[in-house]
Amino acid sequence: DGLIYINSIAHCWKGEMPVNTTVALRNGTTSISPYCFGGNSGGNLIGISIPDSVVDIGASAFSYCGNLTDILLPSGLRTIESRTFAGCKSLKNVIIPSQVTKIGEYAFMECTFEKITLPNGLTQICTGAFSGCTELKSITIPKSVTLLGRDAFWGCVGLKDVCILANIEEIDWSNFAGCKDLKSVTLPASVKRIGMGAFSGCTSLTDIFYAGNKEQWDT
Image (tube, rainbow, N blue to C red; front, side):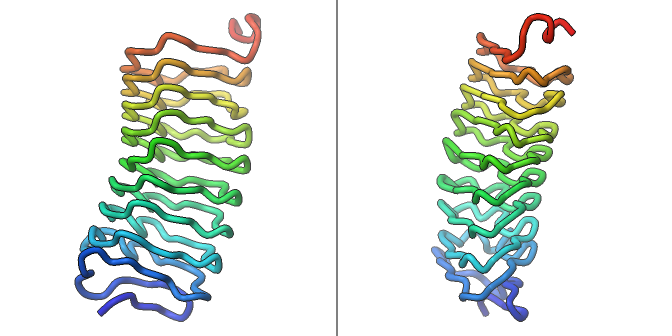
């Protein structure tokens, strides 16, 4: 029983994971397979050490590891796949490496960090990426982002401040719906459309700052 490797790939956990397990991946590991620790006994995982040799972490690799509190992602990671950390309701500390360009669908759904810094090279925040992150207080979306998917921050009820620097043309459907504590939003001059329900349920929203001029807003 324990962690099974296939060559340099951390493939899966065999058997029941002991309570309060901490895992150190061996040096030279290049990949973590989809669902490697996710579900089943993954709730017993409280910590993991990932070497910088890892360049790929599969979808749902840590989904619903409900007792995982923090994680240091490898510097060479380019993509955070769909549902990688979905349901990690104890995850308080995560640093997204500077090389990451894509955060997949529901990648951090229902995590409980209060803040997260998005790297300047990030280009895609996919559907529901941070949905249900109820403890998140503020977010700045960098200029490099060209895709902000639907429901990206849906249900982030503790979110108070949003600054969108991204060169995007649309705030998509339900992007910030249900963010009942949201007070302030900064929109870039590039925005031309605000989708249906983008700010639905944002009952505390009082300030919207637009980086363009009146003529741009009117068009």
